[in-house]
Image (cartoon, rainbow, N blue to C red; front, side, top):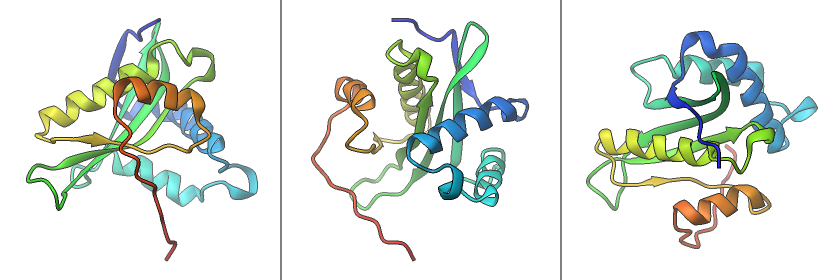
Amino acid sequence: MITPHTTRPLELQDYAVWRTLWDGYNAFYGRHGETALAEEVTQTTWRRFFDPAEPVFALVAEHEGTVVGLAHYLFHRSMTRVEPVCYLSDLFTLTSLRGQGVGRALIEAVCAAARDAGASRVYWQTHETNAAGRALYDKVARHHGFIVYSREL
């Protein structure tokens, strides 16, 4: 297992590499070409990471001085806890480094940030076909059996 040299907060100068990873993440979930996110969504997402009024955050992982992964997360209230909870919204690593500790390092970094912020739980979801991701997630967290529903408005 290769562990990235660092995980750190996203910085403004990371835009180009973040954008490449973000586009890769979206393509992984079928959002590319005609189904790609609107550019306004991507630009708004980017700006939110640097707006202190927004509860959204981003980390990157570096391996040998190169950014190789990203994690986006946010904090919110819960009706079943007093403390805030942390939702790990997006996690993506370069395909060439999957299975080498990058995703795990990002998850652990998000958990550390959540702990520091007073959150009592970190949770995330993935598609049922994401076998590689699920192999990692089964090692670092517990699947509680919930099924996610959504409705576009």
